[in-house]
Length: 639
Ligand SMILES: Nc1ncnc2c1ncn2[C@@H]1O[C@H](COP(=O)(O)OP(=O)(O)OP(=O)(O)O)[C@@H](O)[C@H]1O
Image 1 (cartoon, helix red, strand yellow):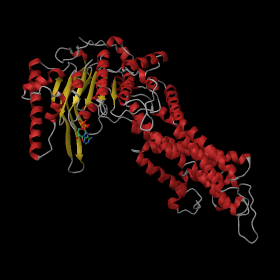
Image 2 (cartoon, helix red, strand yellow; image 1 turned 90 degrees about the vertical axis):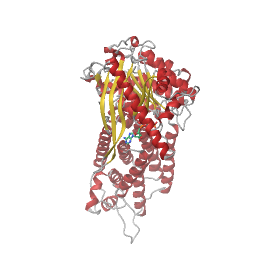
Image 3 (cartoon, protein in one colour; image 1 turned 135 degrees about the vertical axis):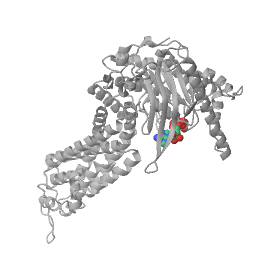
Image 4 (cartoon, helix red, strand yellow; image 1 turned 135 degrees about the horizontal axis):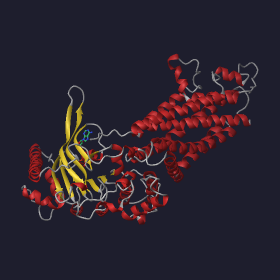
């Protein structure tokens, strides 16, 4: 019996209730027709380069892998560590990066189109990257807003879909519990995994891939996860493939089929129910009370305890894989070609390239992401309190350090010092804490975008518009505190121009952290690069060295240095029209204009400096966006 597909609904990603497949309809390759084959892979080979240069070497990771997955079928990929399970799952799901992949993969008889294939497949990663401060309900609701098209789903239908997934995955009790993380207690490991699966099931996929969904879970939670996945696969006619480490006997028996992998070769692929029989037929009888999965894994695992044991186990694995290949060849010769008619030409059901387009318009994506970001920010009380506390503390400390600046010549140095510290405070305390936040969000974005959820621009702009107000709030507290405690010029015009400069520098800092956070591979690298660049900006900021006297080789740095523009603007603003009382006989600055001249900060006017700051913010934002876009671009190999 074949599953009934609604083509139009598939294009729109709509739930299609008539797609259900009766249990048992797709459990054996021989009884079901070709039409319910969702994914077919033939002779897959994958190699990676292990040495570069003249002595180039390639290591084979997958070798001659053939098989298929049908609607309603749950298939386990089992093998010892390093057998190639994840590599196979990645190859089939279109997530393999680097190396050489050959063979053929057909989705419902047709060559896969990356954009449309992603739309109809779901991939549940081993690490459940989710927002820890959102509840289960909110996590799924935001995912539904981002993933389901507004054109086919009204808000009510999206809510219904979320409720259906919550029921399906038995998450009712945890509905209002936060996801949590190491710092915040949240849902249990099993619930977390089910939420992760739920976000993928919202779009009603045809194919579901799961990488080690039971890792880190106790046996009951593992069993529940696998059971629920199996039930959903049957109910919705989904073909499911999952890698799994040492399943219990009960979990093993839930699967319709198993792929037993060793050293990148298939040792067995077929119904779970006949695996014991097959191994017995080739001389390996699973003992009565032993978990078959453990027994098979033992047979397939290389024994590194001694050279002899290793040679013996290698020979055994080779023999198992060779025997299976021979049996398969005989079976195919006996039953005729197993390939679907379209596979040779790759001409099956073609997908519309339009499926590549994002699901919703930019504003819809942006407003959902911005609301989600604000909810996360509002709930991140330790972060917000940390920002505000450090602003108050620094304002008091620095304010009283420079308490009551007078109008004598000695105050010139202090006045310059306080202005420079204001500039410093708009950079370091913004960049460093926000960088950690952004880095985590970036990883979630990469995961969410791997199933073509939303545009990079909507994510990026949403981050900018969330971080800027938070940074400006804490920075305003700092600025007002220090301005009045240190008695900077008591002049409304000067105060607001100073604040505008400080705001502009804070905006540059947010843009800078977005650029660094987008560019670095790991957060550790970010923590090295960001302070190094900020320190250079401070060194060339205008206080330590006169910009005009810096060696020409390094003088260009001032053009891209926001601190220098900010310091120049703040200094001109503060010192303009000031006059100093010189003690008799002492050489000193008579007026603020003398100070501006002496420090070489009058090249551009205050407003020109502010304009340069905003231009720099734009340049950093654009550079960060370009890097992020390039990084977020899928680089997978497609067959
Ligand atoms: N890009 C790569 N470069 C080098 N080696 C690779 C690459 N990808 C995979 N491998 C190697 O291929 C083998 C199979 O890796 P894979 O991650 O698929 O194994 P696995 O069966 O999922 O193992 P585990 O259960 O431990 O996760 C491993 O030895 C791994 O080191």
